[in-house]
Length: 432
Ligand code: LLP
Image 1 (cartoon, rainbow, N blue to C red):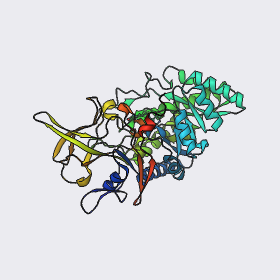
Image 2: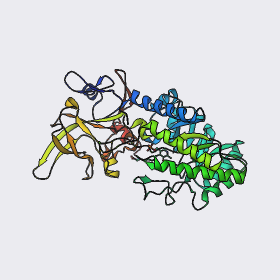
Image 3: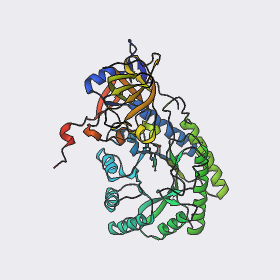
């Protein structure tokens, strides 16, 4: 992925992001601290949009997967950059609406939306629902009747792309909790059902085959299956769904071993697959959508910690303990994720220290980066962990009653608080 050149050094070699000194920010907001480079987020939105429009013309959209970072500050940016957004819960929907996002550009995902969530979506006038199961289709039909509305639905389809032949975590194969399987006829049955329900408009087909994917081929395979299904629906029901949504999952570089496909190339490959499929199955090119999350916000985020102790355990390893950990970044604990880290004051100096960056929780698995290469650090130093913009704040917890850090957005030499640091009072506000 092309890196956006907003990470620079001040005269002393200290890290600056978007022209703002990280040390200054740490002083003002405290640590741990999440920083987001706003122009980098905008740049990613623009690249996706430009690539989509270049390949598919005006009949396409890019929908930001809110789950990657769902905070109010994101939505005006998405609106200005011409993106749609998808939400997966009442809470994400509430956040988007509270930020003034156009409900018509929201799609509601999720494999078990509650009746209350569906109703909230209908009452808010959202653009559509990505229906996961039969019960949901029936519930939506009822709500449509109750509110006198025709609701736009897309079907979440498992295209059966085989995770065994591609090295990524798959959500697109038959053994997944998400959606209707293509292989066993469930997806076609769901299309028949949706087509028969008077308050539903079968608008689209959707698939999402996994996350942090570095290959284009699985997307091509998925697109082929989805278009085949589209043609089958057209033949049987007389009309093909208009929209083909190929989901998100485009990988980013957390470390030097990660080689993401540039967005432009990924989208061009999708376009080729769609064109091929349309020719093969005799379809007009549908309206096409994608749903990136991680690749929009991930690389733009940096977490800043303060080092509290350095333990050299002779013959074993060195532990650098920081003032955060799994509550602000559970990704090592959950996925064994790796990150690049650096001492903020000399972030480009040679990385001569190997250390495991540990959190402050009462849990041995509470590591931020295992076996990291960093500049030598000592107590009081600021340590930055890169590419933490996605699935960090959004997956943060209060384990050990640690308040969640603030989120600060940086742009063109300025900083603004997007989310305040949680307080101890807030930690107990719901306790009785
Ligand atoms: N669309 C759907 C239906 C999804 O389920 C997801 C992610 C996306 C789009 C966006 O995928 P992305 O472009 O961000 O890869 N917590 C995990 C990631 C879970 C992704 C879940 N679905 C992590 O921290 O790696």
